[in-house]
Image (cartoon, rainbow, N blue to C red; front, side):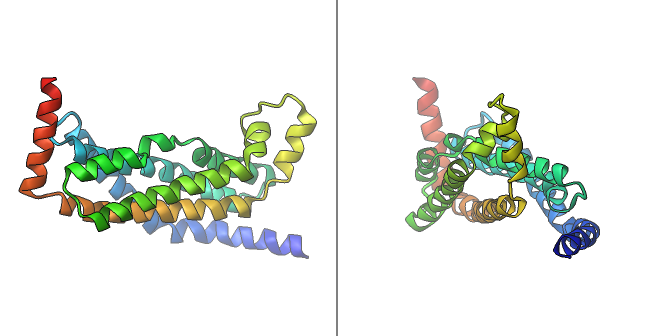
Length: 216
């Protein structure tokens, strides 16, 4: 009966989720396009600190878009193997994203150059710490699954198959939700940082540092 109840729930959610997620998809696409355009516009420009912020935001949104693209299938696809395949893709996205690309040091240097207040700096660095903590959790709890059932590094099929079969999609989605929340927090904070850094003093500092770097 429990198995039937889960199957019925998946059928219902397969109909409902695309409708409830439509607004989120659109909002994510708008934010992504905005950051992408600003990243292109500021690439190799005179204000590299701002470019760092746009790049970090865009980097995180790419990972979020990848997860968003497959999460409904991971939750609702009628075939169990397919659900777990999409769950493995979600794990791989979080497991493999390059935390060093959004390191606290890179962000701190950019925020210092933009003359951002200490409170906002602490908030931004804390969000990145949260993201790195989520990745550490994934690498600790799902390392065997990643190696045996995602990267297929173990040629022993009798090792791979149990890793796939025993993967719990709800545990994967719980981590994905944490990741979503941290990305959303940084994206929201990004607006505050850009406003705080849009001052004459900030622009002059960025231009001066960039000019000095080019003269070396």
